[in-house]
Length: 286
Image 1: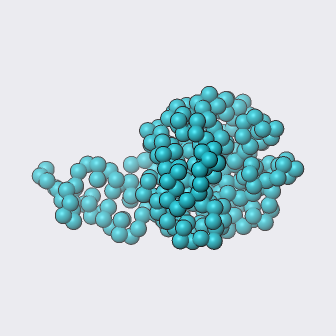
Image 2: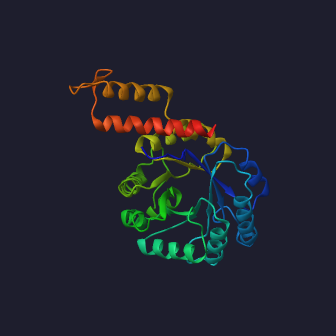
Image 3: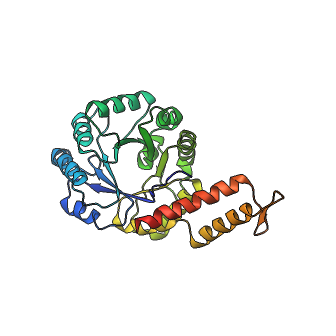
C-alpha cells in the first residue's frame, strides 16, 4: 500500500492575523492553509503574503501540512502571491477557482519559473459549474497537481442554490469532483461548514463526507478540528475488523473465505489494508 498522509482536518487561517498564526502552532490540525484570499482584506494582502511565507519557513508548525492559498488567476495579487509562495516552499500552493487544464498548465509553469522546490505541489479549488464539468481534465493536467479542494460556498452561489442539510443542491458537483480525483489518483478535501455553532450539523456533514470518500474536510474554526479528526479516522472497530478480515483471507487455503459471516474478496482486502494504512499514519502523528 502507498504511504498515506492524514488530511482529516485542513484549517484555514488568515495570514493577516498574527494571533491566528500563533494559535495554529498549537492546534492538532493535519493541515494549515495560510490564507491570502477571502480571509484577508485587500489593503492587508501584501503584509499577509510576507507573513504566510515567514510562517512556512519558520519550522514552528511541526509535522502539519503547510499550504498557502493565493489569490486567483486574473486578480491583481495573483502573480506576486505565486512568486512569494513558490520561494517560501510550502508543501502545497492552493489556487482558487481553477476552471480548466489550461489554467493548471499556466500555474505549473509559473511555479517552476518562480523556483518552487520539487516538494511543493499544486492543489486546485474546484468551485464553479465549469470546473465540475472539467474536473477530470483538471485532475489529469499535470503530475504536479496532487489535490482538489471543494469550494462549496462558491458552488452554491454559482448554482443559485441554497445551503441545506444534506447538501442535495451540490451533491452532483461533489460526486463529479470525487470521481475525477479518484480516477486521477489525487487527494480531495471536502468544503467548509459555515455554521460554527452547530456541532450536530457539522458532525453530520463530516460523516457524509467520509461516507462519500473525501480524504478530509476544510475548516474555518479551531473548534472544528477535533470532530473532523475523529470523523475521518477509522474507528477502533473498523481497525479490528480490517485486521480480522486480512487474517482470515491470508489464512485461507484457496476456498471461499468469510469473515463475520460475509464473503471476503480481494477488493475487501485492499480496502482493509487501506484502513490500516490510514490508522498507522494517524498514529504516527502523535
